[in-house]
Length: 332
Image (cartoon, rainbow, N blue to C red):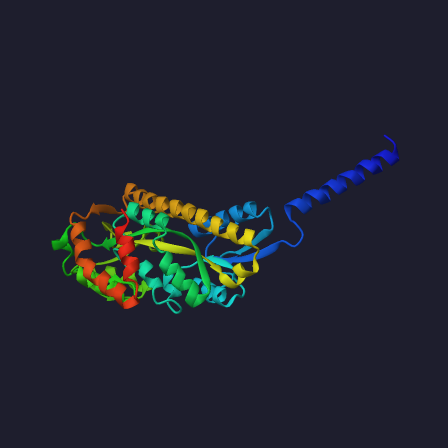
């Protein structure tokens, strides 16, 4: 082969390479910054990666993504505040409790016994029954909720079997700090108290309390099964973790890119729900199979829902979200 021909072929290859790069990363592509507190193995990170993949494909590469892991950009509270201001973070998964500074209605998503069961929870997400809450967050915080991940199911962690209302009555247990948590557990006849999360293990071990409540991942991570090996399957809360997107960023995108973000958010939310809900049940089963804990069916769960009903209604009235509660309860 002549030197001239070799040079010609080499130039052609370089040109082809430039053309390929141009297709993969078009000129003027917009880079969006994401944040998550966890590593690549966590369900939240996987859901955000799915969002990136879907949005990138839909936009033909005009949207690019830079996701910062392991709390590099702070915590969820920081992400939400930054998205509200249109700075530093464009997308993240954030617990509803971190939205409460802006939206009085958002914490309804975290209320115990909001969902009848996992099937009802999934149908509520698919029916977009939380749309009025998302609208309030958009109006008050300038952050869009474009999808819903979550799916961790919270159960009672107790040092003895609790299978019915009689065994639950007066149970000294730890609950999270939000007042609705105390009100709900008082309504179902437990004896709740607020204790720092890091102190729960020792509090059960020393008899200050007999139980607590958490998802399977928390039980595993904190080794609560060592002091509370009896898991009562109350399924009193199923987490909702919205995929949030800065509205300031959203408004800077083209109409086609906006449509891609909304479409990808919904797909990623479903993907995240499927991962987390399946991981939750799998983790609980694995711990039981290993002999670390024993699960117990709560025989009177309908009574729990009945007793919680008036408190749920009163809380929704306080938040101005009775219409949302009724819409959720109407989903069959």
